[in-house]
Image (cartoon, rainbow, N blue to C red; front, side):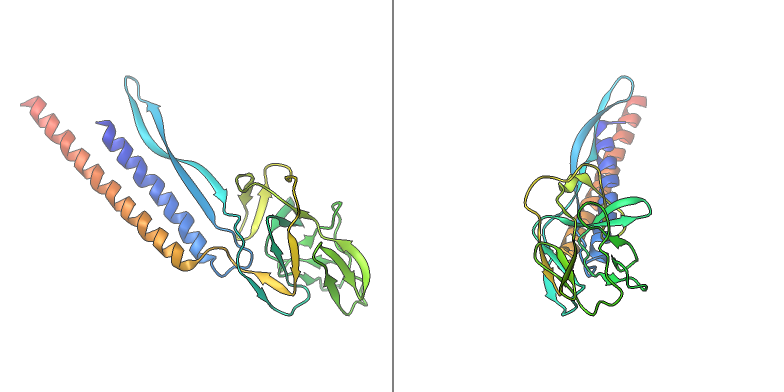
Length: 236
């Protein structure tokens, strides 16, 4: 079997994986704080005994850190971020990071938490404690949180390189490396950041991937036909 069919076969496989990634991006085009995943591809050589064959593989995956559009909501617990960075949150599996700032106060009116019940981290690793009698929470641009005018903490805001983040769910990430140095993002109160995935752009990407996938299958059939012809000629 010639090397061409290996290359075409591997191209078809990685395009299938790319299609799954783009489909997930499109599915989350309305998810607050969602950041799209991007793939890059490269050529790799593999040994099969007496021959070395090239094939296509996913070279890297990274999170697109471009900001989504910010929409004013009027809800004091809705927070958006401008600039590179993430809110820290505490989960049963450890510290995670998110851009989704649709926060709330827990039913016991004790801490600031995410929409699915995870505690929002304060600087130093604790959580933002909200007194039970609080009537209004305010958050400043630097992440300082006040309850009825009294300071109760400051949000943990961290920067990361996109390749150092592993997605867990739609808008939550595990960091594989320590936070980077640099200015933290600005907090925009009473607003939410939308997904940075444009559904129209995503559909264009999907069409391109599907065409590339079909072209790889066509090439596989072509190489298969050439191999069969060569086999017939060799046995004639």
